[in-house]
Amino acid sequence: MSANHNQPTNNPSNLGGATRAKPTEDTSVSFVDKSFCTGKVELIGIHLGYMLGTYSNKDGSGGLFITDGATCLHIDENRNIHLQTGKTANDGTNGGNLIHRADMIMDKCKSYSGHFKGNDDDSTTGAGGKTSKNPAYSLTVEGEMDIVVHGDANIAADNITLDAKEVLTLKGGNQVKIESGDGGGKVNTIASEITTTGKFVKYDLTSSFYVNGPEEITYNQKLKADPISGSVNVNTPAAVISSNTVGARNEVMLGNTKILSVGNIQLEGYKTLLRDFGGTSNVSLGPFVQFSVGQYEGDFIGTPRENSRDINAYTLKVGGAIGSSYKLLASDVNMDTPGTITGTSVSFVDFIGSLIFLN
Image (cartoon, rainbow, N blue to C red; front, side, top):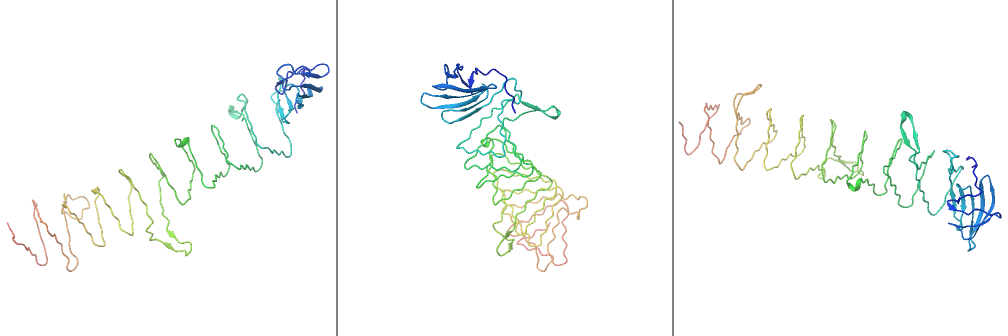
């Protein structure tokens, strides 16, 4: 409880911040300068430095006040109640406060406005000599808390921190929007695990898109399931993974690359360049077709390497079944070599042509 002020307040200089005239001997005074009423002030009594009195206006209205010159309770002519606190040098750091203690406080009003200026000089020094400013507004609730706003709610501050000890939930009836700097700022998400569950995810970007991933990155496309019949369809034409670009695409793998498809694999382009440094192997269990409307050129250097299966520069084995053959239609065949051409057959060898030259 605040101590009584041992100060001469028989002639206080203000009333709740308003200038007040000195009382006369009959305790009925008229305001001389900067008066807040148009009538007189009637002092009911003065005790321990506190003054109790009323005032009147010429229109018949009036008010009541209790003050010591710094702290004041004032009921004005409009039935407004003014509470003003103040402290002197004798009050210490705990003076001039407005304290409510009750089992329950209920406020019901048309509107509420609070302005908390704070005190930058009022700070607290904690462990390690770290100094922190005391907040201008602090609310501590021991238990659950409900804030219901029937309308829009706006919170503006330099920095806002929501600290949930366990779970932080943000709910929106139709939409949840996160904006940073009117679209020019940053949004940072830091967590050990992030799960996104939804029907549709869209990234609409105007600059770059980067993913710095760990050792394993997996994309699993779900099978189409019918919740009524319980059937699962693996042949879904609408299941597509598309990657479209108007520029180049570079993929660098330091390990193996495997593409497995139960359907066709189709590569289309203006030109196709395949280059490897260890060798190429094509195995087909069905027909193997190569078609070109232009020239077909093959250069075989034929340098044997370690673990080579043959010493020939080019080896073509045709046959293995009855009626098999090797044909080159509608084109010339030229064989030029500085070495020897050897043909071996266990059956007939036919050279058929309009002209056959043997040198």
